Image 1 (cartoon, rainbow, N blue to C red):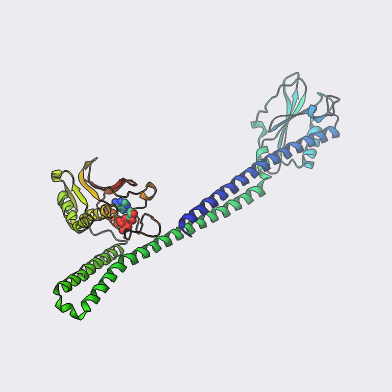
Image 2 (image 1 turned 135 degrees about the vertical axis):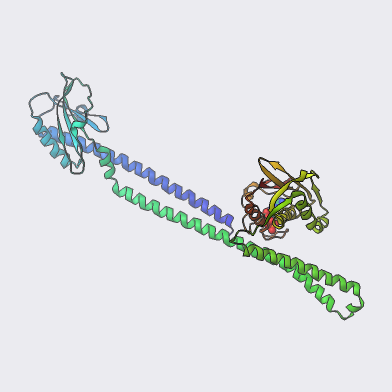
Length: 421
Ligand code: ADP
């Protein structure tokens, strides 16, 4: 399974997880509404019980809708006649009714007198779990043309939520499980990605070493022919090929070892004043065989580069430019490379620009990672280890600089190294 397939699976999994979370939240909302409704119904049932217990109704209507009103979620009003019953016994019966119907939260009761337009008396019905100081609360007055008793539940919301404890706990557990699942998926993806990176590396590694070894083997066979001593030209040619290939292999091995050995440590940097122009010229000279091989045009812009100097490690800085130049040549079919240097916002920059295949935006952020190569399907026709740019970045970091990439697929790429002045 390629990591692209895995990416789709992960996307799907993320979508499913989001869906489960959404559905669960929706259910919580439904349960909350249900619990609220149950609470209201139970309060109304308690009031109906109270009407049955005592003769307090002020109208002959026995429709609860006419008698009970719910002007806000925490308040219930029910009509009573002004006289003929004691407040204490009403509260006494009310307590029983609320208990019977499982309304187990505290309530604040007020007796409204329509002529006076205010509450004439108030009482508090405490509950085990709720604490409340009724003297601190002024009951909201609802102006009505008739007398009524108000029931205010200060902890109604808390009580309703407390009824949902089971739901909260199960939702919490579900979320923890989902988070665990997401973390596992993420690690799985990372592992898979790393494994792929390693596989690519081994593939490239084999490519890079197989060709020179095959060439050397053939050359050695030629040299082993008896009549070769009579053909000094041929002998010289094949010995030269072997030498060239050995050097190439050696430099590759050294490069690998160098990167591996400097894995953790900072690069050993020896800073001296170096003229930028000189570094660039030397780097171009190093890649001359490649330039000729590809019939490339390499241009150093602004030939004077007015005496730019940089406090830097000569060898490493040159290596950085060489690496960028090599890439510019490698990843262009008919290379035209422009190298320039200059000052920009308190920095000195060295830029290497090509007219090559370019790099898609989505790959650009990974370029400097070790072993990273832009995916081009299974076969790379340009060989490499994906180490060059990583090395360049480390060199620049050792100089406290930065590197920027600017690239358009099919148009070309510019790498710009910036060093603080
Ligand atoms: P490699 O050994 O693969 O060249 P690098 O670290 O030098 O490793 O580069 C990483 C990847 O970045 C390359 O595989 C290539 O796909 C891409 N790349 C680097 N330089 C260029 C460039 N100038 N133009 C296009 N692609 C580039």
